[in-house]
Image (cartoon, rainbow, N blue to C red; front, side, top):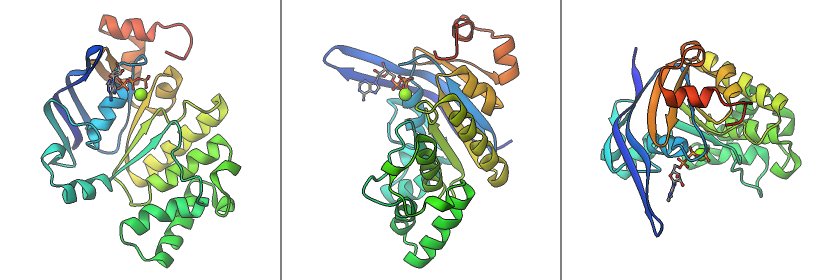
Length: 251
Ligand SMILES: Nc1ncnc2c1ncn2[C@@H]1O[C@H](COP(=O)(O)OP(=O)(O)OP(=O)(O)O)[C@@H](O)[C@H]1O
Ligand SMILES: [Mg+2]
């Protein structure tokens, strides 16, 4: 199996007036092409820092991050830009351009990548069809529900046909039913496109529903990785046991 993402010995320390935080400590993780992997942990465990290292929004203090065979922190700016087009990202807050229509939110990254306007519109419409939002192309983000906003964000993230989709708490702002619909859509996209999906969540149900494998992160340390069945039914480390024994769904 091809390791599409590989983190080896990754350390990240944040220094502030109040001292140092070991956001990531010696993290080793392999993500395989085509899988949906979940990363789960309590608030502050280092989940967002971990995904931000994948597209070099954070640079580790030590260790190596390899994506699609390239060491991301060794790349020149132009090479990094190219690699980032292969990595889509969606967030809890959707991060849509409020002053632009749904269609323009999706054509924007295509035009930035150099696509002609007509072609960009054609492609954006087909992406919006793919996420089930074709009838809203002229709407503005403020006129959409949370689930619809996330669908626009997914269409935008898919604009440049990425090979990897990073989802940082993508369903955390949504109610349970809408969250399930978005996870279903992510699964369909994974199956249809063969895209590799990394889902960060602090809700156990999200990982259970959507992922085949899971990595458990606690206090910056990646303590356990395995299939969802393995880790949920028989966690090996005390950190994973503690996390998965948590009452309720929200960590
Ligand atoms: N830019 C930063 N400067 C200083 N500290 C930071 C910075 N980014 C993250 N941290 C700290 O690093 C740790 C890990 O943060 P991170 O955002 O990765 O956690 P998380 O698991 O995503 O949490 P949440 O579930 O709340 O989103 C936290 O203690 C956080 O306060
Ligand atoms: Mg986070």
